[in-house]
Image (cartoon, rainbow, N blue to C red; front, side, top):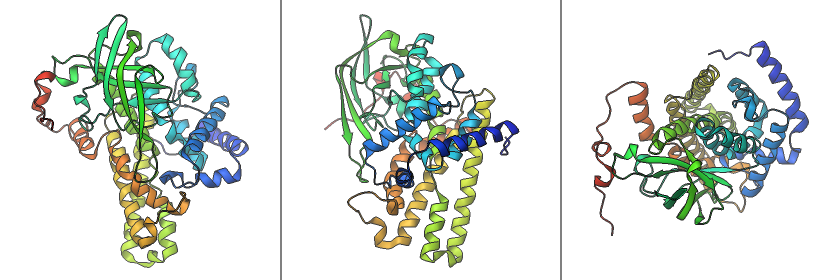
Length: 409
């Protein structure tokens, strides 16, 4: 891993910097985007989605979008250039959070498992963000234990009929397409009876209901599926091979979430300086600790990008990036609110950048749950990175229809 620019990277950085300066949004919009890390912006959610797609389209048309992708689908096969471009974007890089699921989760699944014809049809529109995608994994009874999903797909002539419910589906209210993990076999252990599909969100039987959060945002949704027909050719991977597709997607998801988590120690340093708290030894020590951890996170992201550039897929090590970054955001937000006392939790009529840390605090639990809870990530690190003995999971050995469930009522 080399953190210094090569001559080629330095030339790319210079060109990207000039292009961004010439093509960015107007000053008022740029100022509004500064608080986006914690949803602390006066812009409504629909406007942010529009800006994210518009900025991505500008990048795509200039050859700066999905830089990690193969060139035949709009990228440059260059993960290292993606990180450099994001560094130069400044506040504009935060708009990428609206498109991570579309481009680097669903897009990653399609790149790995879709047919050549499907890739030619779908990926160019994803690369330009002409289509938005969502990812349907979690269910009311299968959050941290993703392999316990009960949404059921039954074979029928020409395809499958899906019934069930998904929850915490980010961006479903904006999406035109979705990937979905469902159960197709009850007679085998839970990890072996899953299959992944994709479908259009306007398919009959799909109903989306937004979930209001305590921050006032509603980016998550419940999705109800009633007799939704999906052609068999819209299957990703083999029947019963959905867990392998899901794991590959989750590794990309944790990498993407970890890479865009904005821990923003600089903003916290500005706050503690403005309150005079920086004069205290304990505050300076705490700030130093967070700044060191932030640099460690950046090094971990750089190491993963180097691995991708060498032809390897994101591995279980991505769990470390997401685990450490998610905890840091909540810790720093809570610390900032304590420094601001009662002013920190004030709820104005509109979001403003003055309430960056309040909104970080409100959204922190969602970020720590997305892509796997802390406990799940610790197991991944222990078992798949450190090679420690596997946790005993008796339900993984039983046919799914024999796994005991709690009685209802």
